[in-house]
Image (cartoon, rainbow, N blue to C red; front, side):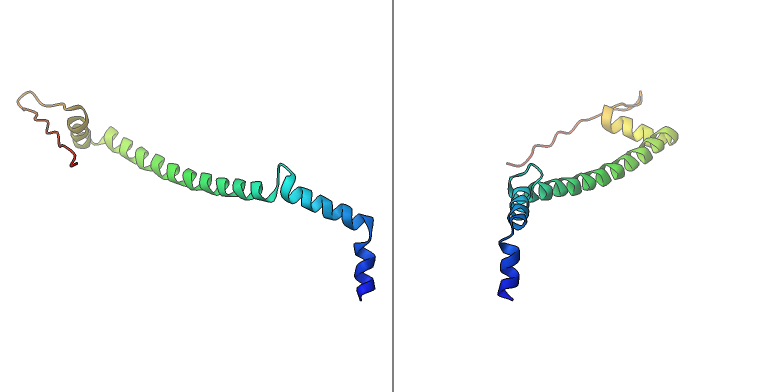
Length: 99
């Protein structure tokens, strides 16, 4: 049994293959650590993609609501741009953040 392993270990192709595996694992530009980092980055980008798709859908529904619902459009204009009717007064209340 020992002779069986020595036959393969003393082979020059074994050392060449071992050197190749070590080179690819640690020294190459596409080593294992880099591959793991890139796969984590891909996973993070997929999560961001799903987040932004949800945000786009939410914004599309809000835009459609503003296009076709005049009461929502009026509320949005009052809140964001401080617009008012002629017979109304607008009071802006600024809240201080607690320190």
